[in-house]
Length: 257
Image (tube, rainbow, N blue to C red; front, side, top):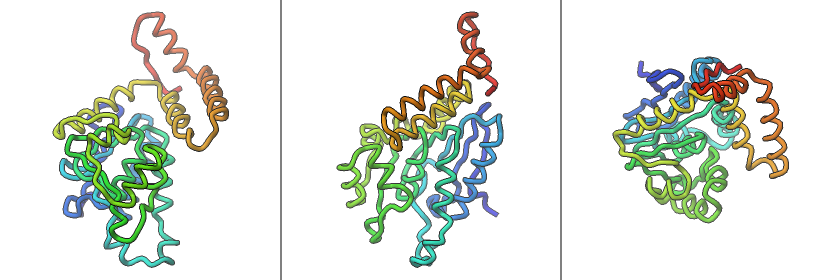
């Protein structure tokens, strides 16, 4: 039986997940999303995993949802669909997810990228929300997440036309942080993940939580929460270790305590 998601540990603290349906251009069927959620749950519970890198292959990250599944679902079936629950599980993952994107990230594949915390693109990466060509709209947060990232004007254009977005455009508009040679995309993402994995895990967790909340809170609420987290971290052993290491001119050893 084909493994829908390949799992590797390329370096300490980093779990590499590679979507593996090349014959379907890594289309995200329910089984793949369920498998991804199960692996993220394992990563959540494993203190050795600090960061997850998510990728596809050199030609395709994920070319959307599996239309064979969608075609069989009417409005009633869609009301009962498990997918919204699966997307919520991905969104609630507390550790950093870095998407390493080569080739096409379309529809649900693009939305999976938008669920990630950081994105490294190969120079052959292409993004799009092509659902309009099927008489649909993006149904896994595409309109909402993208609009909050790049603004209303561009999201309107891209969602209403299905136009392709190049890697260069993606970087210009904040969809990805860096564009690198295609052959090095995963390597760059793993290096970034390794740098993050060496940091204090509890601080990384609340940084992610704090930044993700910016669109759901007012500035004053966000600043209050940020300060509360700042005070909370003062009670951790990692914070004391970090300060002592600074004065002792050595690298800190963080234990997530």
